[in-house]
Image (cartoon, rainbow, N blue to C red):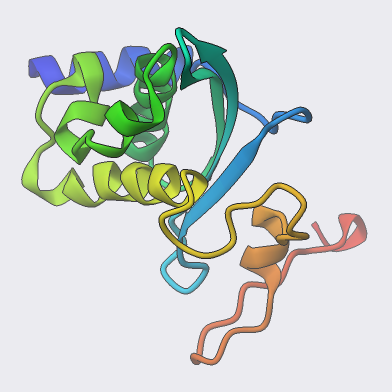
Length: 157
């Protein structure tokens, strides 16, 4: 097993900062229900030395194990970063201790970066007051393509 796989497996075994943050100041979503990879990130800010900094970050993901591992690393890395510093982080920076992603997993870093930038207001829909659908609602929403994800009722499982 290579170093990346070992670190990713460790991050998946104990992901940090998973779940919705009730008192978040911003929320961002990236991904698509059409492809199945979606990530939502919540940010809580504080003021430090006259600058707005990230106090806490959390996430929720429907995606592969690598996306969850990268999001876990990123939420730890973001703590204490100014908004400006967070905006300048690349997908490679957000992987933290995982290191560089293999070519077929680069989209996982981009997914986390997209949710972060959305939460920082660089794309539409970042306000917490915006009644954005939950990830589960987004996944079960009717799509324009030929594939439709339909949640099963308890009785049908």
